[in-house]
Length: 348
Image (cartoon, rainbow, N blue to C red):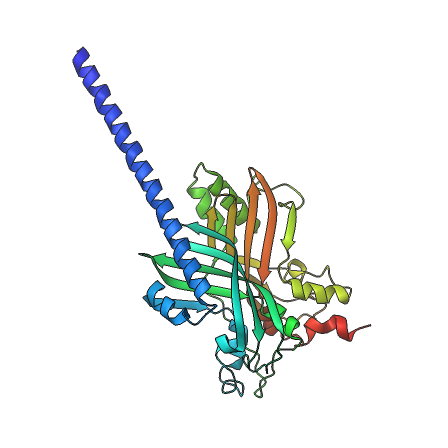
C-alpha cells in the first residue's frame, strides 16, 4: 500500500511542478510580449520625428493596419472637403522639427497605451492655418493593438485646443458653414464593463486598480469599491477639458463642468490597460447638453467626446489622475464660438 501512496504523491508533485513551470513560462512569455510591443511602439512614435518615418511604418505596421483616429483628427476633418484641403501641407512640413517625448507607457496583453508630448514649429499651412512660425508643446495620448510584433490598430488624440491656443488662432471656418468633429468609435457603458470585471475576479493589484477605475466610470458602482464620499483619488495632475474649464473660470462659470451640463451623462469605455501601478483608460463622455457647460449655453445636442486618462496607484491608494479631453471636439459638437479659448483676452 505504501509504495502506491508514495507513487501517487510523486505523481502529484510532478503535476504541480509541471503546472508551476507552465505557469511560469506563460508569465514569462507575457512579459516578453509586452516588452517587445513597447519596443515596437517606441520605435514607431520616434520615427514620426524624422524622414525615416515611412520606412519604419512599412516595417512595424501590419499590412491591414487601421488608423482609428489621427493625432489632429478634428483639424483634418474640418479641412477635408473644404477650401482648406488644397492649401494644407503634409503634417511633417506644417509642424517641422517635430520631437516626440514619451512620458509613460503601459502594456497589457496585445495593447499598449502611451502618454507623450509633441513639440515642433509651425512652418507651413496646417489644415488651413497659415504658418505662424510659433513653437508648440502639447500633450497627446495613444492606444495601439499589436499582433506578431506589428501594429494592427492605432488610436491617437493630441491636444488640438492647446495647439490653437499656442498658435494664437481659432479653427478656420469652412465656407459651407459646417463644423465637423472627429467621430467616436464603439464603446461600452461603464456599468457594463464593470459588471464584466466583477464576473471574472482576479487576485492581483492590477485587477483591483482596473476595477476601481471602471467603477469610477460607472453610474452605479457597488458599495466598497470606491470611497463612500469625496474624490477617489488624492489629486488631479491634469483635468479633462482643461481649456474649456479655463475659459469658463474667466466667465465665473468654472463650476459648470460636464456632470452638471449633461445630467444624464453616460461614460462609455473603449480600453482599460493596466500594468504595475498604472491604469490607462480611453472613454467617451456621452449625453445630451441640457445645461450650461463652462458658460456655453445649453445646445440640447447629443455628444460623444473622447477622454484619455492615466491613473496612478500606490498600494491601495489611488494617488493621481491625469486626463486629456478632446476640448476642440466638444466645442465643435456643441456649436460653441470658435474663439472660446481666447475668452480671457476678450473679456474685462
